[in-house]
Length: 209
Image 1 (cartoon, rainbow, N blue to C red):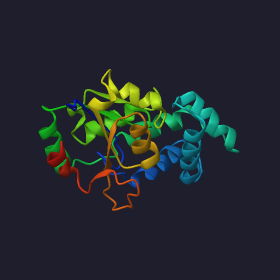
Image 2: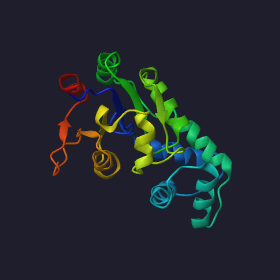
Image 3: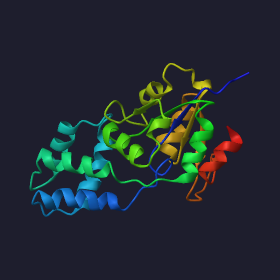
């Protein structure tokens, strides 16, 4: 009999809804440091960085961004942005109630592609950081690299773990490839061609775990 011992949660759009204020925080960091750069350009460079690297490093990221820009940004812009986004989250009572229900039954960790420190701060701002044993960030190793999931497993067997996430290629498929059960956090009512077990609201985890 397989006994589930560890739950591995994606963060953005699973535990915390992604907010459009993210770009406002980036624009604030740029403006306060006297740069007139469209934040959408920097945001696109974050995405392309993830396609070219397996981990997040501030110096490497800054050099990558500046290699693509005409006007180089300073380390302070990135420092300020990472600080500001730590407050980009809201408390969600449904999430809190569900995590309260799950906390005594399972080990719970967060696996995120982004830097671990600001993501931990966002979890704290949302009032849920205390429910997790650890936050595995992209500055250690980024999803969908298999080693990111192995690190989040914390020594548990794949069959003892469940991954809950909202993205096929970043969360669900790589988890399944390792033998970890995936649960699709389909809060946007997307297609589910692989027929993953699905939740349409966070509280449904109480019914299946």
